[in-house]
Length: 383
Image (cartoon, rainbow, N blue to C red; front, side, top):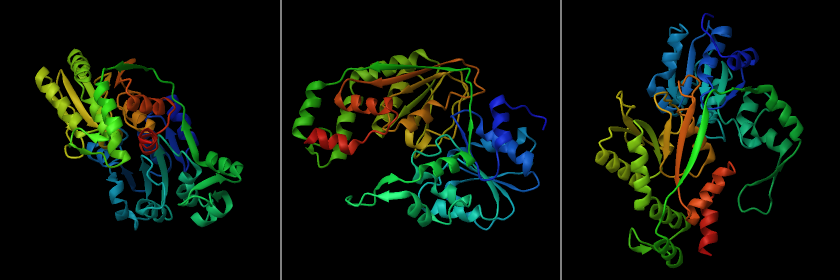
């Protein structure tokens, strides 16, 4: 092979085998390492990549393949995985781990791996042992899900729905995981500088909504816990103080990626950019625009649509207009500009937040690397 890999990539390449999970932090170079493994061991087979829709559409896999002189590569999204269940004697790279649970994607995955060589790429390989069931079955460790459950799972018999109480024989599970999990340990040249920017909020209005359970945006009673948290978040994130800080941060940085949660936040950000004269493009559920090729720009990205599957090395600045509920999503979002090939050494992350109860609760969950449970929090606040 005539191309160069970083030391952490070469180390992982030496350990890779069919059926493995290549686990690397966001921006560690899993794509190139996966393709290098294909060239090393399976270049006589056709190659298929199953990835996110955004990464498929971006052409990143094809570009990396050209760098390695791989002439032909088929790249498609997880939504279309069922179209490849009849392929045999090929090599598959399953990008951005999606084989959790027993839905249609997992069933198609298990059919494909029976007649092909394959690896998985993941930044978050599994939070609990049940996440590994499909991959353990694919590697022949268990015949099916039932065998795994009978050997390792104890359900809570007092729960209203199937809820795992604890796992048995975890020593075996650790040994099996260690056989297939290949971790790329990267020594980054970047430093993430995270800044919480505390903005004001209308405390009187906030307390009124909390006590009266009244939706000030629809002029109707709040009917459930989800609506309760959504109203409070909207009240906090649309305050003029947050808009002022956003305007200042966007204005002083030539190129900036901005993450947001809700459509009303998008509209506020678009209005700010128009007022400043900052060109912008969007990536969300309805618009799939690329970053501008210009001296200055803003890229407005909705968390659910764009927290993974793309990267940018043209800026070192990111603004989080509001926090997402998930630590994993926040980490994925940060990684869009933290790449091994970025020219920057210092990365700037601005988190807009406040001392409102809802913001503090979300912030605590993220700090603990957890997912904020909006239902549990709201029910406690509404009690």
